[in-house]
Length: 57
Image 1 (cartoon, rainbow, N blue to C red):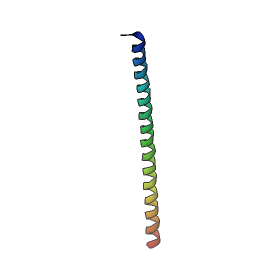
Image 2 (cartoon, rainbow, N blue to C red):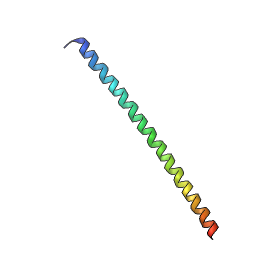
Image 3 (cartoon, one colour):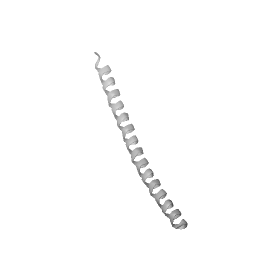
Image 4 (cartoon, helix red, strand yellow):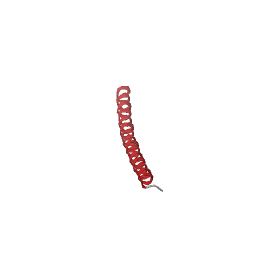
């Protein structure tokens, strides 16, 4: 095989790995943000429920 072809294939594999790593990192950070938003929404829901219970009772 031609050396240039092997270097091109190697470069493509390195680029693919870098792109894959970037995508995985983005997905991980999105999951972390979603978890934070879910916790915040749950906390807000509990505060609203407590407020409603206090005004009814």
